[in-house]
Image 1 (cartoon, rainbow, N blue to C red):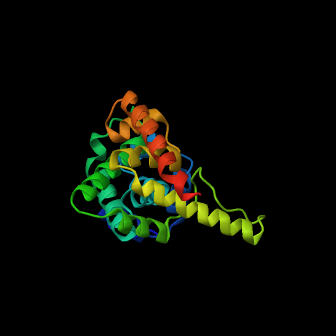
Image 2: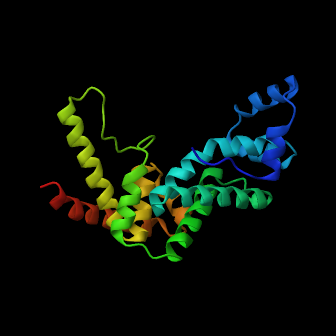
Length: 220
């Protein structure tokens, strides 16, 4: 579980009295879409920000963790992501998708993290393999209906897949994780990474080809 966000606005919301009005208001917020929540927060509804955090904290944690391979550091970067969202929400273009903007901030922080440190592929692989959550991703490797031998083979395959992903170059790994593990569209990936749609498709194609080359001998 990600660490609780430590922002003044979020803290005030958590510590506010649990009156019937507050409860009713917070329940209503859950029915709003992201753009409506942003508008509500900018109009003074402080609980709206907490709702946005609740919707995206775990998803952003999984994305950053899969990108940098360090869960503790990923939690720190999720905190920083929402600090930046909190500080700059008034500048957000409400004609755009909030999720894309949040992922873009998280992606930039993850890129900076990778630039600022040196990690060999083995360390990265071990970190990813240790705690990589399988929830909410298109690639599923386990099913309780399988026999024990089948489950062993599927777990083995998952480890091989994770090892192959870890070997991809940074800019290829990023689009691969966003598309294959996060299920983002090409347009969303383009906005998050700040590159053209053509570049996204090119990088993803190369990432898939490289992934296939890496994993093929592992499965022999």
